[in-house]
Image 1 (cartoon, rainbow, N blue to C red):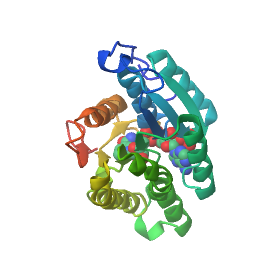
Image 2: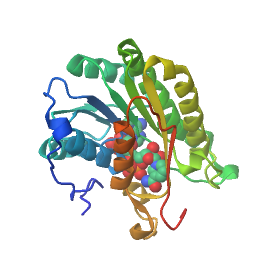
Image 3: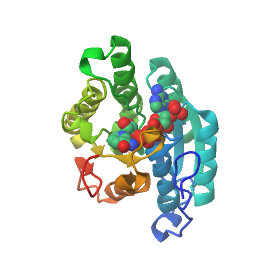
Length: 260
Ligand SMILES: NC(=O)c1ccc[n+]([C@@H]2O[C@H](COP(=O)([O-])OP(=O)(O)OC[C@H]3O[C@@H](n4cnc5c(N)ncnc54)[C@H](OP(=O)(O)O)[C@@H]3O)[C@@H](O)[C@H]2O)c1
């Protein structure tokens, strides 16, 4: 059952021998942007339950963030803190990164999930809308990663998941801004992987197709035609759990019946 935050309230606590052996102080720190609803909230809950990790939850809506944080604590996260932040804003991201580092000492995994869908014909796309969508989907990933990946490089260990889209792999009509931003995410991920692979940092580009979240509200598309956010979250967790000798470079997920 999906709650008002768009997260999956059917996720129940489960004992995970692998994770429960860790002390709260040594459990990994996972930072998730766009954690206030949708795929980000679902990912936070899956990591809370399955990894019992420490979570840094980032988004702008504090009320929603706190509700997700409460759910994550109930599910078994070792620690959960919320860090309200506009991830497209350079100064806000720097302050958020300082606060996260002060609280947790650094992060083991970044899930760069924050983003905003927008569709308009190329001939009608305003410059303001183009800039706004690139800022939310692409600049945000550069800013957050640029602030926190150096700590991973110093420790020679880390994971970065950049959430792109099927629209970041193939042209999406109406996506002059969104598809451009998501192609940018796909390209940035390739560059980051190439530059960070010998520094102990794995970079995975996540490319989901239609996934049922609040971003589809009012679209009229049947939710059963789309993937559940929980499936995207579980796929990210499975990739994260692979041995450090392997990297999943791109994670492409589609609804079983194909693109909507
Ligand atoms: N759902 C799909 O079908 C689908 C398909 C392919 C890719 N994706 C991608 O998957 C990601 C999550 O999608 P979703 O469907 O879960 O979206 P959603 O329900 O609209 O949620 C977007 C999340 O991003 C946050 N966010 C947006 N702009 C932000 C900003 N400037 N600063 C901080 N947080 C910001 C929002 O939080 P606040 O509003 O609280 O800040 C919210 O938590 C996005 O990158 C999206 O493009 C989704």
